[in-house]
Length: 197
Image (cartoon, rainbow, N blue to C red):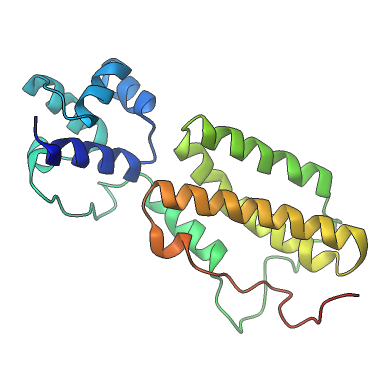
């Protein structure tokens, strides 16, 4: 098989937020088959048809040299997660923050750190779709905690938790090749406040 096929299968799998194991399960083939395709090995055309259906692209797309980036709602199941993640990382500047207006409850930092840890575990087990679906809420909660605790040890802990959530988002976005968003520097909501001494 061609290098283009291997690259295309890998690219569309990552775009879909799937690990090799998740693609294999969805296509009804072994994980070894997916690895073989992505390493440039030879597989039957029927297997390629099955993989293409699982990735929601055509077989011709997988075989095409320099395949275009997938576009459109139907072709990229992870698109909604990426849109929500973009909104969480780069909120509109200068508009009133409506997320925290109704929040009366004090953020629980210990309870917040657990989902960040769980997200890292999911990332390292290649469950990218699960990570992507959790990241927008994690980032919003982190920003809320930093804004709520404006000084002292709790502020320091909130900043650490937000940094961990941002690192997880950066690793995920790099993995799915969303480099523009992975390398953006979001403006923290507390950017106008001088550092606490």
